[in-house]
Amino acid sequence: MTDHVQEQEMEIEALEAILMDEFQEIHPSESGLNTSKRCFQITLSPQDDENDESFSTPVQLGLIFSHTEKYPDEIPLLNVKSIRGIHTSDLKVLKEKLEQEASENLGMSMIYTLVSSAKDWLSELYAQDADNDDDEEEVSEKDEVIVPHGEPVTIDTFVAWRERFEAELALQRAKLMPESALSAPKEKRLSGRQWFESGRASSVKGAVPMEDGSEEEDEDFDFDDEDDFEDDEDDMLEHYLAEKSDSSVRAT
Image (cartoon, rainbow, N blue to C red; front, side):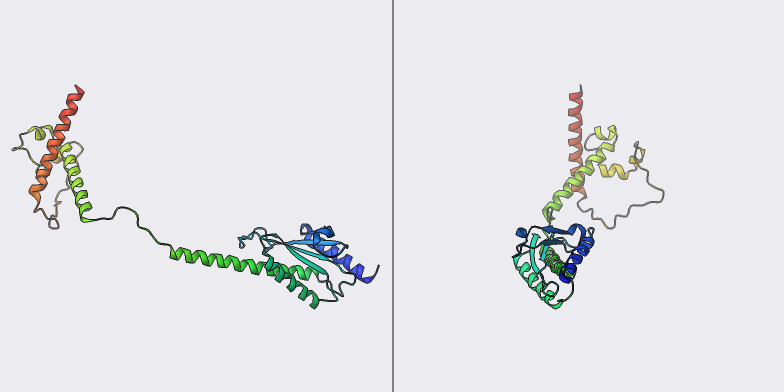
């Protein structure tokens, strides 16, 4: 056994021990190399740690080599192929890079050096692609147009809401008033506001009494339309009495 063959065998044993499942012997016809000698493929990924999630692109590279007769005094036969997700143009660049490095390492076992170089190249290339994708996502988020949701508030919608609110308030007051107040003639009937201001609401079961010494502060409210508001209350009371009468008839 010559020194070249012995050194080649020792390198193969070392690569098997270091790379384990990533290192395998393949048939020369699968290698893409012009040789009938033993051929080997090393599977490479950008990350070393299986738990490293910094690379979102699932890529894998196959580094294929075969020893020549005088290796390591001459460069090995080299080929690279994409197992997953690598462009042909990138493979061409990588192969030229590895052949150049092999020429710079003549006279010593160099396959593991080429493996490390290929893995670094793969990590740098696809880490850069991941950064570019992140930049594009940030730009798209900035350009995203925020569309307002919901109905816009206008004078008409506010007035409509205020009328509904006042009507509901008048109805709630009517429900709290005693039967005697509701059955009184219209000309003698107190409005909801008058009935509450008279203090009679405190005698109704479930009503919350006013604290002693508390006063209502009305200086911020404008009651110029009080007559209209009371008319609305009277109409709501009549509507409430009509509904109550109908429900009594249906119950009998």
